[in-house]
Length: 167
Image (cartoon, rainbow, N blue to C red):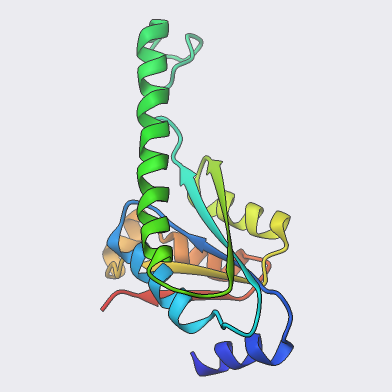
C-alpha cells in the first residue's frame, strides 16, 4: 500500500486511476480506500468511475432459440431500469467522492457486457495507470463456480491492479 502511494507521489504527474464500481459495498469501500491512499493533494489525478452493465438476463432478439418476442414497452422498461441502476450506482459513488477534499478530476464511464472483459478492455483503451477493484471475498468453491472478476483482471489488465478487500 505505501509503495503504491509513494510511486504515485514520486512521479509528480497526473495519474489516471480507474475504480470499478457496482452495487456492492465492496466496490464503495475500494473507492474510499483509493481516495484515502492513492490520491494526493500535490498531484492532479483523474479518477474514472467505471460501471459495467451486465448483459440482459433474457435475450430480446426474436431470432433466439426460445423465440421470445417482447413488445417495445417491455424493452423500453428494461432499458429504463438499467439506466436507473447505472444512475443510482454513480450517485452513490459520487457521494463517497464528495466526502474527500482532494485535487481529483472525476470522470464516469459505463460499459456493457461481461464485466471482466469490459473492464480490461476499457482500462487499456483509457490508458489507465492503476485499476482499483473491490473483492467480494468468495471462498475457493464460490470462485470456482462463479469465477472472480478481480482475479481475471489481476491477470489480464494492462496496468497494475489493486484489489481491496472489505474488512
